[in-house]
Amino acid sequence: MRFVHFRLVGPAIACITLLIAGLATIPYLGVARIDAEARQQQETLVESNIALWISDIEFSLTAWTIWDEAIANLDNRFDREWTDRNIGASLIGTSRTRFTAVLDPADAILYSRTAATVQDRPFFARGATAIVAESGPLVAAVRAREHATVRNGIPLPVAASRIEVLGDEAVLLSASLFQPDFATAVPKGDRAPILVTAMPIDGSLQDFFGQRFLLDDPQVGPLSAVAANRARAEIAVSPEGQVQVLSWRPPTPAADVLYHSLPLVVAVSLVLLAGGLLMFRMTRGTAQMLVDREREMRHAATHDFLTGLINRALLEPEFKALANRRPLAVVCMDLDGFKAVNDTHGHAIGDALLRVVAARLRSGTRQADRIFRLGGDEFAILMPDLSATEAEQVCNTLLAALSQPIVLPVGETSIGASFGISLVVDAGTTCDAAFNAADAALYRAKSLGRGRVAMAASIGVRPPQTDRRVPWADACAGRESTA
Image 1 (cartoon, rainbow, N blue to C red):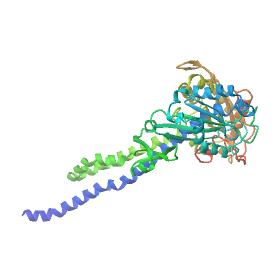
Image 2 (image 1 turned 180 degrees about the vertical axis):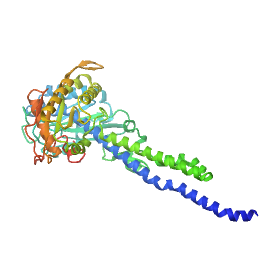
Image 3 (image 1 turned 60 degrees about the horizontal axis):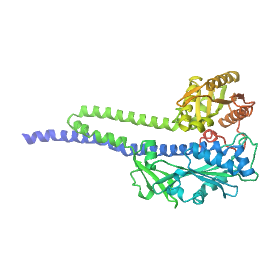
Image 4 (image 1 turned 90 degrees about the vertical axis):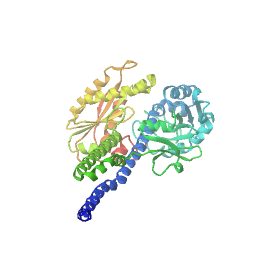
């Protein structure tokens, strides 16, 4: 009788077992693909944020390199005392830079200075000649772009950087071109001096970037030593030219969920209906978790981590989205007096000031407006459905708000701002053309004495046919900025 019962029930049990096994196998099919996509997204995010970090460091050096007085005292005539006070001592005293060198138009060392606190460290103990020699590829890259970025108004930074590793020490090595800002002094020849700087990275590279990007088990080493199952990003080179890779244990959300669901899979074998419902709920929870993580990663890639404002990655998409709500006011703005706050009180106070500026810009604009931080103390605003007069009134209101005293941990301070406005009324106007016109107006506002609002006289449908580049040029063309 038992054998008969088995023959009758056996096939049903076998079918149910196969069905349960099939249902239990389904999650495995997508685990590898989902985890591979999560790994790729994290690698892209890390590489993008490292590039943005280096770009911000390069932009901060423009306070010393884009300066008429620097051209006058380094190129037109060399004033060593001025150079030591305004380049060497100023950079080492007010930034994280610990080595500076000025190269003449022939790329020979004109001046160098190393902070006393790092003179015994292996990288810096080799001397200025060795450090400048290692910066040769960076200097060559700057020279190649020296005459490719000329434009009216204040020029864009021309710089190249790389992280270099010597033993346990990591240093950000940069080369930046000296350029005039208002052209009261210009280089004597076809080539201008170049600033070479070295900024040590505190602690180990794996700790520095691991904590910054919340990476799991970060390690730094040659590419050949990285296991295939680890995520990676090229971040540095050794003095011998060997590529150094930051690697970490990639996120495995799907595999983690599957591992923790194994007890529930056993329960499914006992109660098919209850197990199926439970798996459905878990799948829905997993999908929601992945959607949330992707949303967080997208937000981090398109928003400024300091102020929370939109960054230049969304400049072109937001312009296109608002361009049909004409007239569209395009505003370029930068702060007046921000460098003095940074030089006097340090970057932490400067960051606090930028957060206050962002809050005042938000409170002075509408929900429909879009505010961007382009980098440093440069901002942009898109304001749809406003006439020229209305846009100018809004900017004057923002100017008044930004001019109000700001209470910081070191005390009360005041800054100003300058605004340039262009009005998009033509459906064919491009992002590049609109921002070029606004930037020209901003430059005119600064040349008239700063703390002003200037309206662009006219705007073209197409950007000028030139090799000049502006801070938003790559963003308007759908490329990531390399400056």
